[in-house]
Image 1 (cartoon, rainbow, N blue to C red):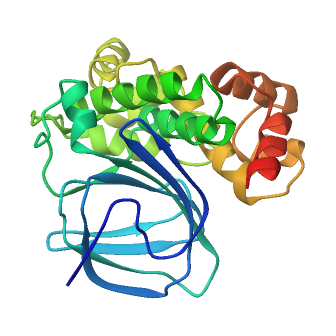
Image 2 (image 1 turned 135 degrees about the horizontal axis):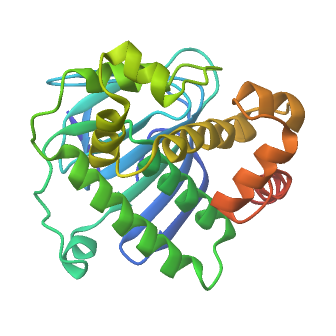
Length: 268
């Protein structure tokens, strides 16, 4: 069993940058199989392209583009990938970062698959800031990372959740579906007012905000790995038209999809 030191991942790096307690790595995976190992520090793995199968002592994870995992301290695991191009984005945290931001180091145990679209949107923004990497990026990345842990902590709090919650998530993640509150309520046998109130309680946002975030996240990943024109990509991600997609993307990431792709080509 091997322990990897800080900033070490199996593969070749497009970019490696340090941001005051956070080490950010954009990596091409080159090994089809990596035996049992652990990393010295906790970190996020975010699959940008390709696929990765990862397993620890308790769970197995099959990650496709947009798949996000958080690994706590010294979590033992192994991973394999198909014989195809696979790219991952890592955010590694040191002990001082937790201390400076008054966060408990042992607040999580093991690995966690993160499905919250808000957290994924924050990780997307960190990825973007790591590419910009100017004098303001440190401040932005710190704020985004703190926001990430606030949401992650809330997600992992042990609380009894209603049985309909998992079914609702599945419905809302279906591609090319435009469910109304009335339709969802009917599926789940709930009153629309009750569902709306409870949804905001568990997700911290409205239905519309949640669905828009899912679609923007999907588009973000597709822009990294695809060369489709924006019109096709817009419809594929569930937007009414290209202008609607561009407007929403710019609202979230403060730049157009075209500018984002140009930035990727410049910094990759």
